Image 1 (cartoon, rainbow, N blue to C red):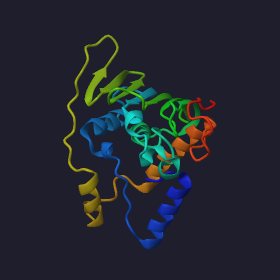
Image 2: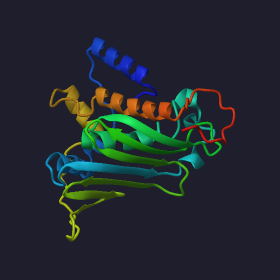
Image 3: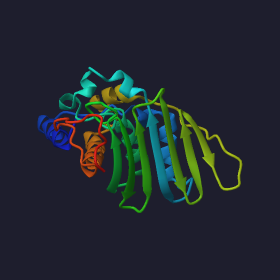
Length: 233
């Protein structure tokens, strides 16, 4: 939604003062795979959630030099703030967890913004997570693993498998996609339902992104003295 939590909070106030609806286009909120994951976790399909691993690999470094994405004054950061925000969105939206502590490692790979980020996260509810965002990759690959006391949900590039101890894997039936980020916003404007991805949720995403940057001692807007040097953890 924005490049900082301060900007996000300002935008939320502007929308409220103007009496306007605001929706963020996090498209995974409307995709059957992630609707299933969120519902399965909430209904206890895998028991109490214990951990999450979320990973995204993308050839982002190869395509970003010279673009606005590589300019921290415009982008607010690197791969974490860009494509990574969608992975953070899934992590928070499907689980409803509240992050309280992060321990990140960042690598610049000679860029003006961070490219790779590996972060361990502890949540107020007791669960832990690993967030792996690799922007220097030969291809796109997206995976999530949600482990619980009674099973696990494995997402691999759109394919979902439900696993239980010593049982054969199950390919679950997914819900039908009823809308998308564009149609749902139009329907909200016409009063057919509430905004499905409110700005308040995107604020949570950018706050976790900032938490990771701060814990790494990384300021995207600071002068880059040695882009090839790893940022301190």
